[in-house]
Figure 1 (cartoon, rainbow, N blue to C red):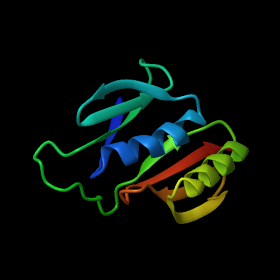
Figure 2: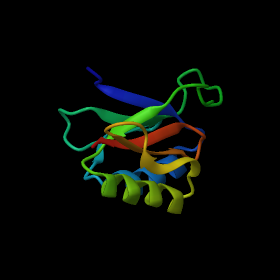
Figure 3: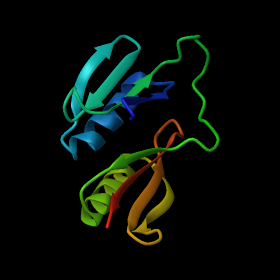
Figure 4: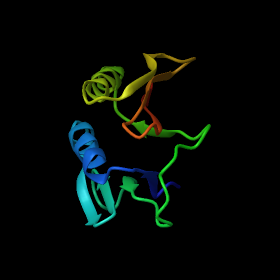
Amino acid sequence: MIGYVTLGTNDLQQGAKFYDALLAEIGANRFMEEDTFIAWAITPDKPSLAITKPFNGEAATIGNGVMVALDVESPQQVDALYAKAMELGATDEGEPGQRGDGFYAGYFRDLDGNKLNFFCLT
């Protein structure tokens, strides 16, 4: 159902460095890039994540209640990706752990304050 998710950024190069390092951990690479936009995917035919400078030229702001959830294979991968995000300067929004029956996730905010998580079904 989801084709891609786009997050606003106020510093495209800083955001690119963050997501290059973080998403490389799950095998994602840049597959689209323009002056104000970069997108990553594991393969171009799968859902992707992008960052962009807002089209209207105003500052990027975070959405209250908006979160991007990235599906991975195992709790160990959730733990490792959460730790990588923290190492890259993300802020904690909920350490990795079991969240109810069969759902394991770790929550963080990227350098622009966008909320994301890595999760897996257990």
